[in-house]
Length: 367
Image (cartoon, rainbow, N blue to C red):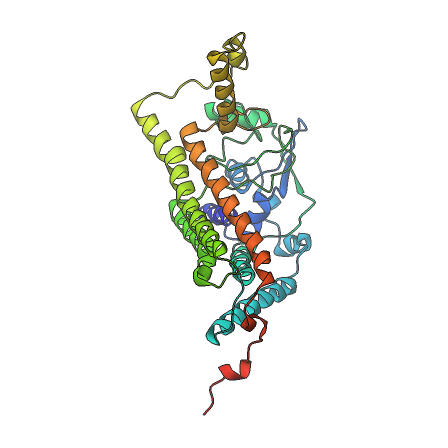
């Protein structure tokens, strides 16, 4: 959803510049890292859609270099439309079969409910990624005559700050959710798959609504028949935990990453963010005791607040925000794990109607 929103924003930006042939396919390709600049000082890195628009608007990059034809994009797409169509038909047929079972009073298993939840995710993914090329492995190299250092000098003070991904980080303003694994090379060679652009308030409401629907699908089985008295209780607790985790996570995310920083900027000056790698070592107490235990706890808290491999200060979050987030994630994963386990455990004792097939002729009106 974040990638779709970013692509749509890119199309609007190019339309405002009277470049109407920049479509969603182009924006998706750009946000995938499909355009890589070649500068005179041999600095290359993937561009996102906002950075492409910036270079075009500043006349550093000819628009014709990125306004490639739809056929060129389609040639890079490894997924055919027929495959998507067949997949959608299969998922819709499964959902229709479950609805028909409910109409005829036949038992629906918890595994089928979980599958319906995955179907909702699949259909949403197909909708938001309908224009996105799939499995693009080779980027389009574009020539830029001006050195990157000159571009940064002309950009002003904002471009002089150290970057964590590419030299054009100052263009892509906003918070990104990224899960770093392993060492990171700067500038990056590819845009990671787990990089989710920040959503607008309207899209955030839509996302929360979708998450609530997905988390509440299994609530349909609230009064299902279970083999033992303990299993329905655990099932209901798990469903409440999943649904509650969505609200806790979103409340913590909104409070810690949006409301509190905004209030802090208005009421006081931002603290210095200069890195001090020896700060923890200077304050490390000698020997044991309560002082040493407090230092260990502080180190653990700092690791939770910033788990990036290179300890990027821009990825540090307040502990008051990250703790509820970790709590909600752990609670959600635990509840989801039990539901997945119960989906298969309950198969040992299903009601007789679970083995009956839908009578489609009974659903056809007879006159």
